[in-house]
Length: 146
Image (cartoon, rainbow, N blue to C red):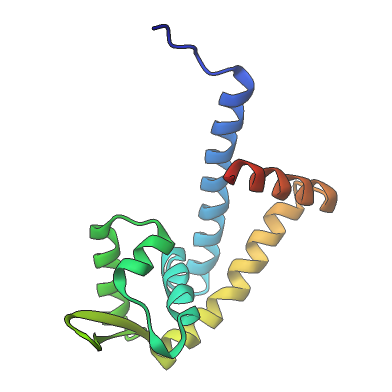
């Protein structure tokens, strides 16, 4: 069986996606840090926990939403708990299980992170793409996602 090398266009697309992602994440991380706010990964976790509402969320469900390996999620949760942004509570019906709940401070810091995140992301995209190009790219990305 002969393996075919990826076409130039596909390889350029792949490396472009990876580089654009890394560039945007670095810009957002820098902006958050400049404002004395936690890292971007914390925002994503806090947002998912907040969206779970008063019922909370099981760690394995959070892992699925964040696409983190188990060991990475465990460390992240530990840091969020230590910072006072998340509480662990016993899971009703599962004595060994736990639910994650956002604290008031967690909600406050997540809300403070969003304007920095949104402004930085929007500014970086708008500096490079027109509104029509942004819509087209978003549509094409959805097609890639299936």
